[in-house]
Length: 256
Image (cartoon, rainbow, N blue to C red; front, side):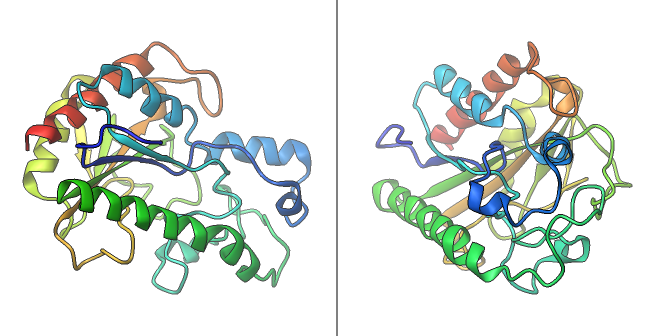
């Protein structure tokens, strides 16, 4: 979704949807009730709305890239190969296990059709969006908008660490100190920020990953009890305050 032509900022919202196409639903072994419960836990509910509301507060509107499908279709933020540490939990680019480590897909299910149909086109489109910002402004800043539960779920590999109100995920190559400082200031009013716990890292298209310093990136993981009823309930009044904070970060990046 387009923003201002001069904005380098791209709000990336990969996990907000609950939509699963019927032909993908047929390859999931959960019954309808169990699937709805899993979607409650795994979906970053209301984060697309958060990004949309932030636009209203921004002096210069950023661009947005919002996944219209559930991460149970494919997870566009995972590595599609053995580099992905979440394979240990059955949650690579195509999940085989649920948040509670139960079976999601049949044994031996082939991930390639889902990767070809959904994952690779998504990656190509996100790469193109970053390239467009580079061409237009000389830089691109990907702000990854996520949420996470207040209580650790069994699938988490780093669930025993701190669970701050706002977790900031960074990359040693793509997250410059100035970007991190802006985010820490923008989200300082919610009880504190933490770094890379319980979820580390951030999303950068593989074309640019580790090679192009013109691409900055930061992941924002908002603890869900700040703005919604868990696990999958309605949003509360905290959503607007968080949207204003996100807008403050976006506006700060225009001057950085």
